[in-house]
Image (cartoon, rainbow, N blue to C red; front, top):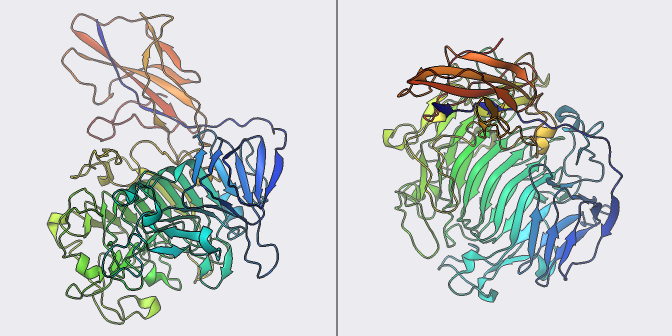
Length: 638
C-alpha cells in the first residue's frame, strides 16, 4: 500500500490573550559605549538621539518595545532616535511571533494588545507620522561622494537628518580593520523581525529622518524582515555601502519607498512597497535611485541588484469598475526614478497602480555620468561590484507592470518628461517594453488584477489619492506572477524564487508587521480577502500509523481569520500524480484541530492522495499549488 501526501494551505491566525502587566519604562539619553541587552519586560524610551558607540553591541530581545520622543522644544532638533555608530553593532533579534517594535510614545498596538483608538486600525492611525526620529545604522564601506577620480577609502560623510559630529559619520574604510581589501564586508550586526513605525521627525525643510537609514553599511550585516510604517520621509534609504536586505515592508511613507544614493551596491529581495497618504503627506516614488554625489560621476557607481519587489502606487487610471480619479501630482506618481548616474537591476518584480509613468531614466545615453548611460554601458565584475553577471549597468528584466496612468509610455524628453515638476531634463527609455529580449510585460487596467485583492476607499478631495483599505499581495490564481523565465541566483543571499513579485503562496508579511496588525491584510470580507497559507507538515499520526493523519497548525502569526481544515482524499492509480482533486472525498469538513483519519484501505494498484485545505472564517481557501506553481482545481467541501 502506498499513500501520497499533499498539503494545501493553512491560515495564519493570532489568538490574543489578556493584557499583561505594563512594562517598566527605562529612559535613555546618554551614549551606550558598553555592550548591553534590552529585554522585553521593559520599554525603552529614547528621549533624544542615543548613540551606540565605542565598539559596543546593543542586543535587543524578541518582543521588546522601543519608543522615541519628539524634540524636547521647538528647534531643539533632538527627537528620540537610535544611531548605531561605526564600529558598533546592533543585534535586534525579533521573531515572527515576537517582533521588535520601534514606535512613538502612544502606540499601544504592540505585543498581545490589538491597540486602542487611534492605533486600532489603518484608517484611524493614518494621520500619524513624524512623531519621533528613526533608526540609523552606520558603517565603514565605500561611499560615492566627491570621489570622481575613483573610490576613496578615506571618504566619509555626515549622515542626513542629524548634526552630530564624528558619531554621525559613515564611510572611511581606511579606518576599518578590514582595510584595504574587505571594507564592503563591514558588519553592523543583525536586525530581524523589526517594525519601525510613525517616525521621520522633520528637523527642518527637506531634512527629515528616514525610517531606516543605512549609511555605508556592509554586506555582512544581516537585515531580514524589516518594516517601515508611516514614516514621514523615506522608508529605507541606503547611502553607499553594500547592505543586503531581505523581506522588507515599506507602507504609507511620506516620501519614497526605497531610496538609494552615493553608490549603494547591495542587494534586496522580497520587498513590498505600498503607497499611502499619512498625515498631510502622500507617498512620492516607489523607488528613487541616485548615483554619486558631488559630482554624479563619483565612484564606485551605484549598481545594486533587486529581485522580487512588489510595489503598489496611488492608483492608475482605474481598474475594472473603478472610477478614474485625477489628483494633483498624479502624472509624477512614478514607480521608479533613476537619476544622477544611478544604475541598478530589477528582476522578477511587480509594479502596479501608479498614476504616472512606469519609470524615468534621466539623461541621454550619449552623455557621460547619467543614468541613461548606465543603460548602454556593459556590466563587469570588479573589486567594487559583484554578480549576478548582467549585460548592462542598468537593467529591467522579467518584470510585470500593471495599470499605470500613462500606460506603458516612458517619457523621452522635453517639458512633459515629468509633468508635475516641469522637469525638462531628457529621459531615456532603455527598451523596457519594446525589447522583447528583456521580457518585461505591461498589462492594462482593463485586465484582471494579478494579485488576489486590492481595495481602495474614495477620498472626496480631487487632490488626494484614494487610500488603500485592504490588499492581498499574493498572486491571484492563474496569475502571470506565478512563473518567470529567470530564476534568482543561488549565491548565498538570494532565494531561488521562480516567480515574480515579493510573494508566492505565503504572505510572509502577515502577523509580525504593523501593516498586518492594522488590518490591511483582511481576515474576511463577505467571503473574500486573505485566504490561508500553506501547510507543509502532513504526516501519519504516530498514535495510529494505519489510519491516522496529522498536520501542524503551528503558532500562526497573523490576525487573518479562524483556522479550519478540510481533509480530502483523491483516489488514483499507482503511476498517477495528484494534480487536481476533482473527484475527492471530504473525510473531514471544517475541522478545528490538526488531525483526521481514514479507515478505508486502497485496492491493489490504487493510491490514495491526501490534501489538507485550510480556510478562513468565511470558509474561503484554495486547494494549494502544483509544483508548476499553478493552483489546483477540485472539490471544495460543503
